[in-house]
Image (cartoon, rainbow, N blue to C red; front, side):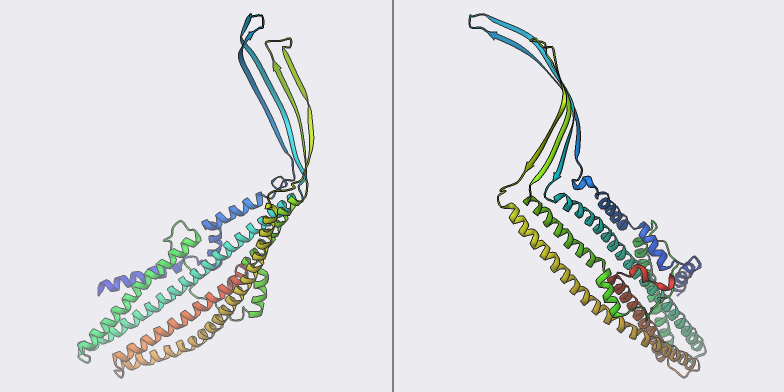
Length: 443
């Protein structure tokens, strides 16, 4: 029995100590998560890569300039056999060549393929921004859900602590009456069993709270995953915050996944434009300026030097490429159709999700209001029951039933409150508003 008292006291002491520090609001937790979470940092780097790729040179607008140089040498022997039967040999003849030059290649026109590439790079940059936004919204939603899950579990911990105190008070009364002989040993044993059961639930709940805290710390990217964060002890419900019609309009205009699907369609259209560019001729310029020197050990010339400019223009047109252009264009048109179909499919899915979430949100709001009334009634019932029990006008099993009814009412009210908040978070994420209106009471 003493061990139970000590464990429960330590549990409640740890829970209370966390509230003596600065309170971590949801906004603060999300801010820390966006700064420290590894997945967000990775996706932000990928977004920067997409942004870095948007250059004229990467699209092919600019020429390429190469500077080159080289040196070559040969050492060889000459053997001559003449028609008059004589011969001659020359040994170790050295010949050397050095060259240096600068060359320019520039594609002036390739059937608007360069323009398509540049437009695609800009679209990919915007896609990178959208991917970052999706990751940020997902993280914010996950942190919010875990934050309120932790709040709910701490509320349950408090309710279980209250249940333990009530059971302890009942046990005290039974022990006193057992000593004076007004209650049986069976009543005492039953009171002890109920107290131990409540104590066991409390200790198990402390483990649940700890697991939720670790998960929240992990999402926030904290180095110390065991750190206990003092957070708010209530779940704010804004019953007038959301309207179904407004949510749907914002979903159609702000949903990040839907915007990304539209970007994919635009990219597919640019891919088709790039393929069609091969239907046109191309025009390329090239120019170079260089030096070449040749050193000889035989003949009348010892050194030959060349220094000058070379230039040229190439115009070309692919007449036949094995019907590949036609095949690729057909596939590109089908890809555009597929992206359009995916947009329609996503819109239908979003509409279904919104309808389901809205129904669940309204239903949980009604449940929450109902359970608040039930909780008041359960408190009143227990207050009456404990007074009758102290007067000896109520059996222990009836008091236990009143106590269980009170705890269950607290549980149902807490669950309805938490489920309402989860639906609210999901609706805000669906409509692209989660970062703005997630917790207006704290802004």
